[in-house]
Image (cartoon, rainbow, N blue to C red; front, top):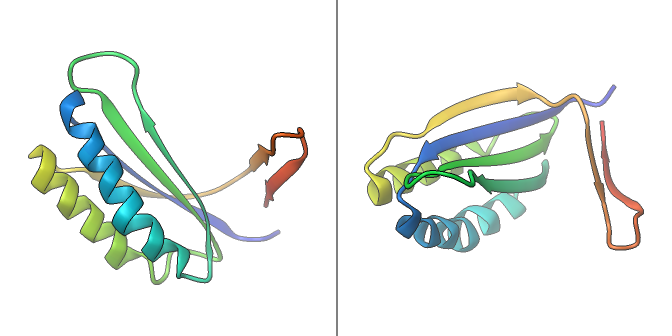
Length: 111
């Protein structure tokens, strides 16, 4: 069985700050992650309720999280700078991921 790992970073942010967080993800985190050989995917979620939505960012990696910690730490520092909150971070063994393309065909099927 292939080893697939995930890192989850979560935090609360005022709704008005979400665009700054997304910009950081788009301009800094994703380009740097894409340069790493074991990067598979990234998902960012925002809760639907409350004045301070919870944001959960999930990165998925083949063979472990090596090489990505510095990028994740820089993202957490940026979140702290923008929101004033301290994000939590957790690593997980990924049991299953399936994603489908527009034609209904699996385009990601791990592990």
